[in-house]
Length: 386
Image (cartoon, one colour):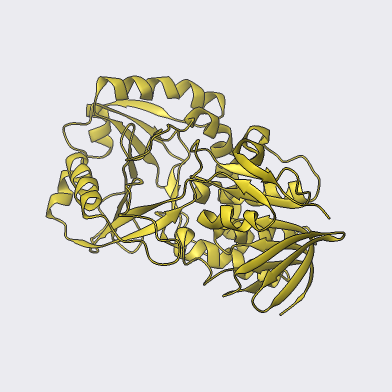
């Protein structure tokens, strides 16, 4: 299949879907090309958390800490947009503002909790510091090792199996064409913009937006540009269904941990623990070591989980960067070629969709993203322009 469009979006995960929807509602014709099935990779395997208060700076095995203070204006902006997502998409995506506790078990963790309060307040993110007793009063399930916590009423989650399909359905209603099993095999600059090849044909567009997760580097390379990437596979763990027992998201200040009970009743345990390895062309295998470590950590903080059966574990790819920060912007030397990806993409998806729309349209985005641009990750070729 071949044709023309104003914009070609590469990747039908949550970032691609949100971007396609934002562009379509700005009266741009859009084609989305997905190498496999929509929402099958990272977007469909994530925990689905909405991280609004400051996050922990390292996941297990992560070598470089992320700048969680830099995240805060992005989290605040994304939080405001998430509020309108169900109405905007006319869909129930199981968005729940259940509130979240970021817990500390050591004096150093508690000091970090206290330090982040001022930064959060400066960006309009409402958090409250609780000592261990007050935290257990709010959530009696917490174990005795918790010495302090910060509470954020805006933390929550949405169902990753519903959000991306809802974005794509809304995009289709606005005229977007979504093509699955359409891996990009060629990407060349033309006088009109870009020619994008797949096994079934060629699409010509004025702009191309790459939201291909761990495959960003591979797709951009087709245009002659080299972008550094550090993709990994992380894993999640889910228990059998339980009656409603855990009303809030629980996270750890210095260790990779997130625990919540979803609407269907299962308790989902995550936090970025690594899978055995990343398999970019198949299913990444689960690490037994990470299963044991992540579950033991969850049981320590929430002792009731020691009596709950684990149902399954799975791994999903994460489009990490060498500095562990998001990347969004135009590729230097490749006018009209844009990309977005990196950590916490689920939380940032509504925001990145609008930022990419504005960048494609030549408008200033609603948040400052210049320091998150592609230039910092360029390692080699600067692309080819016709």
